[in-house]
Length: 115
Length: 115
DNA sequence: CCACTATTCAAGTAGACACTTTAGCAAGTA
DNA sequence: TACTTGCTAAAGTGTCTACTTGAATAGTGG
Image (cartoon, rainbow over all chains, first blue to last red; front, side, top):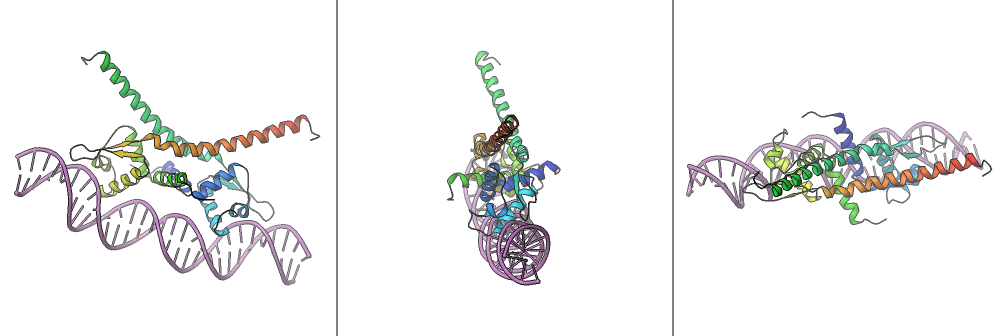
């Protein structure tokens, strides 16, 4: 099996979401734009650390950043979440489909025990 | 902000999904149960490595394992995916809600430029 | 019993990651 | 001009992670 671009994208996406500070930042950005300093305020860590978290989020496409005066406002790019979402939904779909098949098979057995 | 149990659960879940081998294993298990050896076959890595991946998946509740002869068959527990799914959907919901609010606001501006 | 198969345990290693501190740069303010 | 603010770059540190190899455990079949 070869590595596809989608694999790397999902690697980065899920890895980004695996950190609670980054998830919290994403959740807050869902409510509106914010600057690095604003985002850093609630956490007991340096602004630089938050800046690094933002770089991770930007690298996987979850946020984008503009320029306004001396600030770099961050905004959420929610369509980036779709890749993660659809991976999960696809796995669920395959599983559900198989379960339907099994159930149908059991139903058939119930109605016609010969087979 | 304090650490909640949900945080740790999501940490583990997203971290588990951040590895393509583990995602591939999950996808394959969606199609049906499999043993460690069967799961390890396609990858260019030791069976022990795959066994460790399975331990990660088991720890975050994504798979469970039984016993059958000398094998430990793995099966997917798809309801574990719900926590990740609903976190993503919630972020999307908040964002969409805000966009609706903004749009309604702009509509109001368009109709009544005084405000 | 022995040999074989399936799996896990344990220890080691190279690299990634989440921070830190120090330093530097760009833009606004006095 | 100098000072401050907002942010990033770079380097260091402790911890985690994805593997490896070698050894141990446990069930199966001759």
